[in-house]
Image (cartoon, rainbow, N blue to C red; front, top):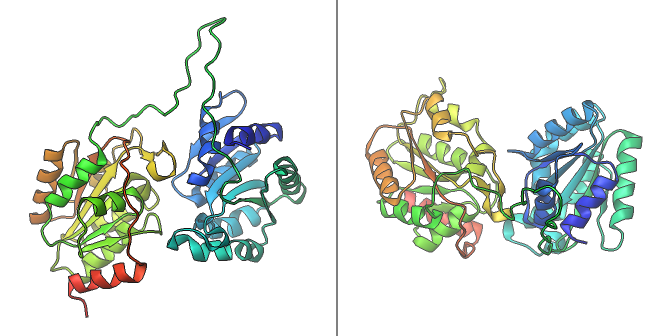
Length: 384
């Protein structure tokens, strides 16, 4: 079954509110939901975090909708408190469509442990669940929807790899009747830049000396690795959103070093509360050695190009309002290099928003084991 066909099933079973955090295993489903005409249902809403999506679903159900939340199984950890103290506490019917990364122990290292504990975690929280299987998709969905309504609580369907097939391109609408606006195959970009992120990263790496750089997970670290691998690079391969937190801890622990973080718009939105912490929380003061570089392409690139909530929002203005000493936006390689060189020698904290296009360049996965990334980074820092 394709993502579009499964979206049709969701509509047929009465689900009319969709939100979540994207995963490549649900790419076709999310794309189909984004393309649907509005009608009586709300188009797919891209949430910054999984617990935020559960909050949206709660409000939608209270308003008379039947919600479904799409998340990767890693998001179960992020959303555990919201599930227990909101969805289960208030007994709010919600369909959880949880993609199962680390299924049968076959995946990238960051997914293996969560893959093993996904079902026990759902059991522990008291969330009934079933594994979506080919050939029984309609029966599985009917079971989950009926149980969620009957028991008035969240019910989960786990989506293993390849249970949803890739969609074939949708045929163009017939040229009859009133003119229709064609549905774009890719969302129009609201990010005013044609600068490829790879070239922006090349310029940023070229501006570095020996500064340690904490990299957000996804293509930010993979493309940076492809530009130039450095022992001073800490590559995140999991824990989306936490690169800026790691960099802040490092900046506070090593005030004599200039600490740089290469972040992404989706990563930052998952941890937006880090901005006022960096900008001058009274308990720590402003870390003048903190340089925050955010590559903003307006999409979740590694999961299929779903729209990011950063569209139409100036994250640089948000950072300035949160107390960063310097906050600027650039959209050229010369601008990237100049801004980063200036931030490295100036008192911060500094925020550089790099507007880049949604273009993706093939880049290898980080070849080092997590422990090797850790140990060589500590050696580069001279940590005992």
